[in-house]
Picture (cartoon, rainbow, N blue to C red):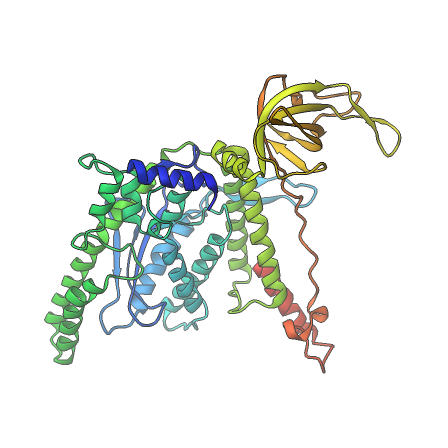
Length: 506
């Protein structure tokens, strides 16, 4: 745990109230997200029990799997609700002009956003999507195609959730924990009720700690899913399941209907507190000012959604159950790149993120003490290049060496390089050279020159990302999914299929 985060957690435990960990919201929040709460039955990991979802906080929709019944009708209703929300995001599009790397194209002006209580629900939806997208379709059962399409979209959304900075599928506890630090452990923060009690306690409670203790009361606490409470299962669910099974054996239709109605009321009562907490958390996060880089990431989200819609319309083949080596490596590279970009953009936008890096030596803040605006260098062609330098005095710990490339939140288009580090009177003097954003020697851009006495924070610049070159299937060893050792020349058809799988993973 980073030093500053630990300090805020101790302060929260001492004061009894959560501490702000960010001045800005770093993920886009839609004006009309789809809230989704899921419960699963004991036994098969992906077998659903009930789902509460909707875009209106006052009108949730509850879908229920009957005891000892088929899940298909409930999944068909869930597919209709989710795909209707996704289809609504495709009503309007915009024209994007051609660039040097991409032709002119159209992009949807919106993208779906589903909010769930915790990361465990994301994993449950991932398991459910993996099960549904491979189900066979039958023209005599039109629901089967809708259920398979639901599996496709659940896989897409849960895959997006693995990418840092994505806002397609957001676990609410993770987003809250990004902006507030509570006085409980990170594992306890995965409980939505207690985390929200620390952050936004009721007015009649003395502190967030007292509210969290009250939220843990077994008599009133309701887990946010997807796993239900064992006492709830034994005391309330099991009797209704037994009554339904008994009425079904005796062919008592009215008794079955009455039991289903009671089960529906029971689960609605069980999920309603979490439903209200989700909208409370949404309102808190929506009130935070949005970071500058959030708009760029949401544009990328809309691009990814448009591309997925085109794939579904033109091809529609589901992702393979297990990625080949190249497809898995491509996916891992995208995840690493997304994490690096998100961390760099958070650092540039948020003073708290920069303060965290200053405690680890990956950033430093200091006062500009001297400026050499006339410094030039000879380029490879012999022409003079304007390379102004300035000195910063800092008391922060440094884990950098000369040659390290830096960036500064105050001059986001400029680049810097550490030229020299020298101790002086208890502080450290760092001489920096501006390497980008200052124009040419004959047309200099003086805006990137800081003023003497200015306090600036410099962070390590992210490395320029370039997708690694991955081998084709013919060049992939057979131990990693390539052609068998005794058949080096595989068919062109298999090679094309493998290439398609790699493209789908991207």
